[in-house]
Length: 372
Image (cartoon, rainbow, N blue to C red; front, top):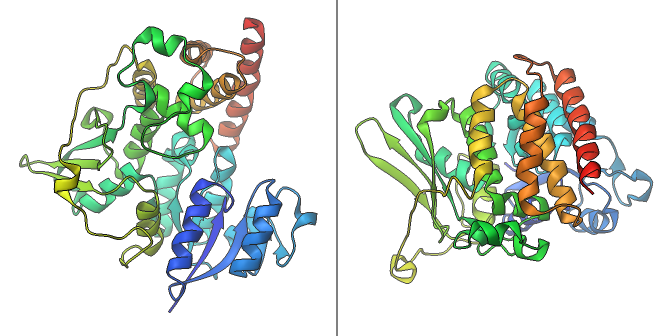
């Protein structure tokens, strides 16, 4: 029987690769709905090819070939077996909660959902009996390694180190946008690539891992692994370490997340050659150079509304860097200043989370304007 799936963010990097996976497995999936932002030209091409019943975009009048509905309506359609949440930003949070309330399983590729509201989302999923399977390669790796979380001593999240791994602090301070976007291993969107250059992305993943697996922050380690072959690992209480390895391709974790618990031969399936890889290197992150990682750990430990503030400030600062308004290291300084100003709410509601996010973004933009 085919698994019925909807994809939120079908025209983005993860969404496009998910459709490539589904195209390779045509007898396994029926696409119920595709949702995009402003790229209705590509969305219409996807509609023509995959024949979903429904579609959603910021300009619905331009959609051709499918009935137009909203994100919320997609996530309220109980004919879905699973919804892939592959949109970026806070827009993914409310649809995810709607899907969970309707008992629909989630393949999660949206960091903000757990960074902003992990304390709300994960208990709700447990209460509704909904599976949340992570798409990020690191969390997907941990998910594959864990059999009994009560026996796990530590999570080990790997990081490639990005384009500045072997550069100096001064190199990073003077980095251009093109240098920050020159990731040596992964082909990702511009915002997440900049976050990978500062290692903020890894900090966000630490917060996600805390919520996904219920692991204390002092039992989540980050290790730099430039080859991006070991996607993450876990250490059990007896000292055994189990790691998940694979080629640096998002097709593999996407396929795992949307076919879980089954496995099939897919678009990137092939025998893994240890002899071709030859060597695997690991090292401690440079906490002075990659200060964003330290900021994220501290924000996660503070909890409450603090990660919401950190995420919003960092995102607006990254956008400003991409527009050449500030330097790379200014992202860190701006994020720290916004955190210093923030008054923590210990258990914010969803409405409060969105209000905090909105206010922090306004204040961050004002701060950036004052620097120019």
